[in-house]
Length: 315
Image (cartoon, rainbow, N blue to C red; front, top):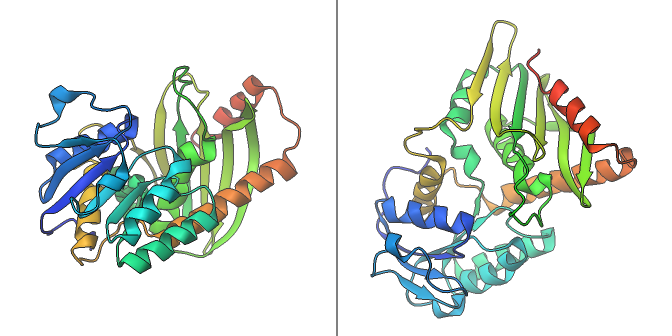
C-alpha cells in the first residue's frame, strides 16, 4: 500500500520559502486532508497573491509548537538537523527535504528526537513517487539493465553548495534501492567531472544480485535538461520520460499523501530515516571512490562528452 488513500486533516507548516519550499507550499494548498497554517521564512512574506490570508508567516520555527501537527523542512541542508530535532522532540512530525542531514551523526540525532517525541520522521525522496518510475519497475522482470540519464544545464544564478551526488544522483539511488529490493553487491564509478571543487558529472554502476545492473549518468553541465530511464531486457527496450508532464497526481502530491497517511498510522511508501541512512552510506562510498580512483581531474568538456556517449541507448 502506498498510503495515499485515507488520512484525517493534518495542520502543516512549510519551513523555507525558497525554490523547493514554494513547490511544497503549492502542493499543500492543493491537497485534501492538509491544512497549511504557517510558512516560516526569515525573509518574510513573498508571493502573497498566491497564499491565502489564513496562512500565517513566521520568522522562526520555534514559534510553531502548539499550532501545527507536522512540518515540511525545505531549508538549506546544514539547517535540517537543528530544525528537525527541535520539532520532532516536541512531537511534531517532520518531512525533511533531501539531503536529510549532512552526516550520519546528524541523521541519528534526528531519529532519536523522533523517538523521544513519538513523531514521524520522513525524508523527501520524491522520485520514488514518480509514476514513470513505477511503470518502469512494473515492467522489470528481475533481470536486465536499467540506464538512467538525469542531465541539467548550468544555472548561473543558482547557488550550488551541493555536489551532483546530493543534487541529482541521490534521487536515483533511493528509488533504485526502494524499487528493486535486492542486495546491492557492488558500486563502481567509471567517470567523474569536477567543477569549482564539486562533483558536476558522474557515471555510476550499481550491481545487484541476480545479474541486475543499474547505470546512472548525472550531469548539470549538459546543453539541455533530460531525464530518461531505459529498461533493457532480452526481449524489449522500454524508455520512460521521468519529466513527462501531466502526471496526476504529481510526485510531490503523492509524497505528501504518503506522509499524511503515515502520520495517521496508515502503511506508507514514504522514505524512512533507515532508508535515508543507507542512501547516505552509498553516496559517501561514491565520493570516496571518486577521490581514490579518479584523482586526476580531466578536462570538463572531454569528460562530459564521454559521459554523454556512454549514456546513449544500448543494451
